[in-house]
Length: 293
Picture (cartoon, rainbow, N blue to C red):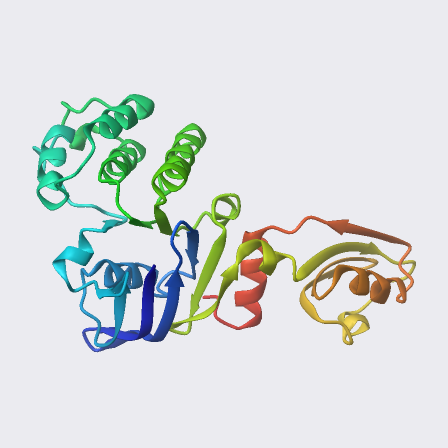
């Protein structure tokens, strides 16, 4: 288990994170979400031990991640990993094996084959998606107990995303790897993660089970005989409301049965429940909190 306890950190004179607490349970896949500049990448670097926190601590199975032995249990894949113009997949493997002596060559070769990558070619000739897959292959071959991924889906085409998710799921199921993943592709996180953490105003403002969180909300599309105003819904727990004359699309927080009855009392001509997704809910919630740019 990774525990972030009352962590605060500044980059230069700018405070980035304040009093952050977070727990990554063993064998779980957590999505880390927040707008650009919220501090997701900084938090991942602090958890990985790349940065030392100004205040608070990060513990990996009870040991500070400032300890070298604890860091060997963690593999951090940043959004822009470093390589030189001469770096090949082979040389990258040799370099990472210094830090992760127990890297599994069989897993490495399996991933390269699945991703269609040539370990002899310079990385500079790879596309962005190929580079991402290469580093994912490195991460999986290290067989870490904890895997931290920053913008993991960036640059991947749909087929590569499918291969990526299958490879990560295999690591979770077979090795019990715990994954903390930040991504702008929230729809990808929805069918990939079992929990989430939302960063806004420099702290983790919300976290928990993704399915349970989504289950607290419901979405409806309504049509009325006469045009309606927003005030018509003032008594309801509205998260998001779109009105256009006689047509309304609304997201409510509450029990679906109770919300259905409340809407029926407004006498709509047509009422249809619609599916909710994590991305839509995220946009609605951060917009309501006034933290969208």
